[in-house]
Image 1 (tube, helix red, strand yellow):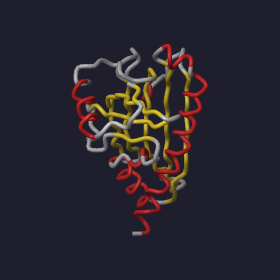
Image 2 (image 1 turned 90 degrees about the vertical axis):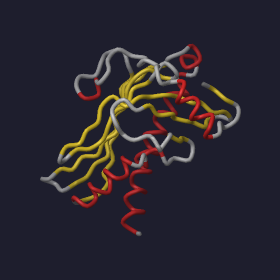
Image 3 (image 1 turned 135 degrees about the horizontal axis):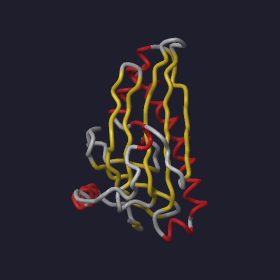
Length: 191
């Protein structure tokens, strides 16, 4: 959904309410946890967050609080709990207008050395696909990593026409999301 003005919180909530019965816009639900399907763009980005189990705990908290979306040009309905089946609204500001997109959490990860979730696009989204956000702790190296894995393709004629712009925005999102997670860790450690 494209808009010339930024929707207020009540409009975002109404958008979410209207998405309650939406279906996923792709058939390969959960594929970011197994084998990625053909016919999509695949983006895999990783960034080291630091060293130690304390950093891993901070990174898990940052994921729970949607800190990877603290970008300035992307907002998410942060009151949404990270639970399978929950629907989120993603608001993107780009090129003088806004797009409001819907995704639903497909699965969550809560393992001793890995934490996160994946969401998949619903019918009201500019892309078709799935994205996984996770943090990992490597006990051997003591390193903590933030990982984003996505497969996607344009969903509409407008998205297909704007394909180069869409790919550029996806790359900017990955870069900025890694920086947001770094900031979240530093801010908590500093306070």
